[in-house]
Structures are given as C-alpha cells and as structure tokens.
Amino acid sequence: MDRIIKKLLIDKGMAITDLARKTGYSRTHLSAVIHGRIDSPKARRAIAAALEVEFEAFWNACTSPETSQSDGAAS
Image: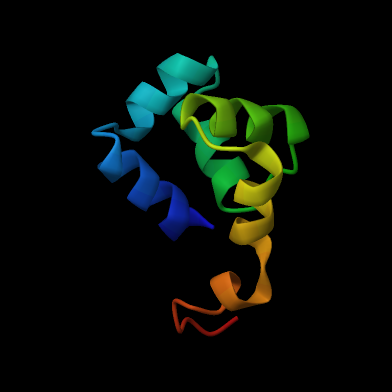
C-alpha cells in the first residue's frame, strides 16, 4: 500500500507533509494508517480525497494480495 501512495504523492508533486496538511492528520498518524498499523476508515477516506482518487478502487488496489506481495519483502 505504501508504494502506491508514495507513487501518487510523487506524481502529484506532494510530500507526506502536504498530505498531512490536506487531510488534517499528523504525518505520524498518516504513516501508521498507510503502513497498516492503525485501521482508520475516516483517515483512509481523507487520504483518497486528498490524492483525488476514488476511495473504493484505491483501497481495494492497495490491499490486494498482489500489491501486498509485490515488494518482495518477507513477512
């Protein structure tokens, strides 16, 4: 999930600080949501809105098994 969000941030010329400003959440909270340490549907919706992507398709893509395993990291 974090790779997709990082790519979107780069494509939009944004940093996590910009995302925090747009969503009203701290960088720490956003990082925890993005990395799956906190489950916050409200924050996920805010992230999708700030990145101007459709919520359902975006989060489904972020949580699909293919996306989760694409980085080659061991779990």
